[in-house]
Length: 419
Ligand SMILES: *Cc1c(COP(=O)(O)O)cnc(C)c1O
Ligand SMILES: [Zn+2]
Image (cartoon, protein in one colour):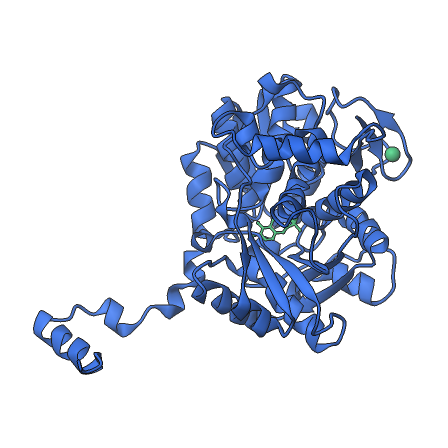
């Protein structure tokens, strides 16, 4: 296992995580040596670990340690039992999208309420292994909730840069509660990523944005776990929202590695869905370009994907090429309509997480995804992350106190007559 620059190919030891990127400015990624891997033995090992109720192997990330970080010393693992999220066969979602079958992978069931935990446990564990004392991230909210949680578990100082006024209230609440230092930075998320990339290492801060290659390794576990849940075969498509594009990069890497090892026979196609007002990656792919033009003023109600300059776009572009993937962009109205479907089946998600289902519907309408095809839609974050997005559903009846007699009369009038 080693770190490789995706631009110049320079190789580095995983024991030296400072600085995160390569001198040439390129992103680094973890390269594994899976030549000796035996798919059947791995499946048996992963099955056996389903018995664990405590300790690192009870985690839905570390269950797959051989594929994530095989050489990490177990003593350095910082875990909250992350992963282990539900996979729901959902008829109403399939009908909304107009495809044959949809599974919802509810990553909001993670301990801090988003898929960021899958990656963060891997990143923070590596930071602990390297002796780091302080961690940092720029965040639209969920990265900071997750990092603050693991930093608190490991007793590390945690510095968080957030866009002024741009973070959903549930996410900020978690970040404060776990004891992080929170700074609202002029210029928002994109400025925060730039600042930490340039100065993080010199300030002694171990950077846990998606430029951290170990986060990508941890985030692969989502698709590994889903394959495990479905008996090592996956639907035709994996559909997910795209902000910084770390998740798309991770899912693609995980799929290709599982195929190379022989854990799965067929690699699903990936669809990355962005919000119309924050869709620089979709615009690049749709125009056939190979250079991302940042969106200077990203806009969408789905704050988790309000990102104008996605750091991982080169990794995501490669993943799309290698998996014959597609992109699309959806409006906030389409996102909120999909969210309503997901909420009303009793699962629920935050707005950004609903972008996947909205995109699936659009891609089926456009004939990109066939009506007879199947899809796994990744729900990236929990319903309670963004209470303001639900507030419009509050009714006059819920606000205004009703005298008991009036309530009884009204309920009686609505109750079907007894036989
Ligand atoms: C971070 C996040 C995203 C975007 O994921 P990327 O890996 O940044 O593309 C989408 N939805 C939610 C809820 C998130 O927290
Ligand atoms: Zn390089």
